[in-house]
Length: 98
Image 1 (cartoon, rainbow, N blue to C red):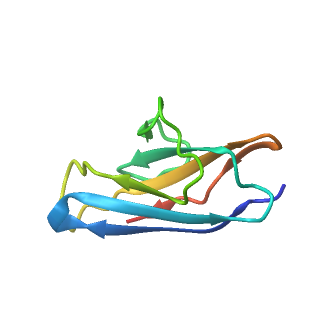
Image 2 (image 1 turned 45 degrees about the vertical axis):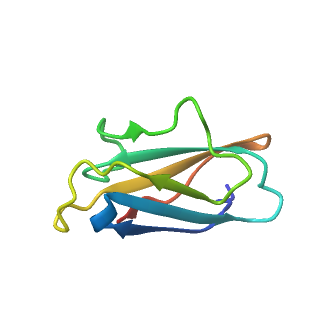
């Protein structure tokens, strides 16, 4: 199965209590809905993944701002993953730590 996520990274701003997620998709996979999940552990099959944008999927842009980091300690590393819902199927991004 093709992974349409060409790149994915997270840039924290601890002073502003936010993180910017940025990604790029392979050609032909634009136009889908992106859902953003956050986890304190980053374990793939754990139940601690929180969906951050259930009612407003990301569309037509390649970034998301997590504007509420629960713990701004530089020792706490949040993990993120993306779900792309596209007409050709659903695709998970790799898990990315902050």
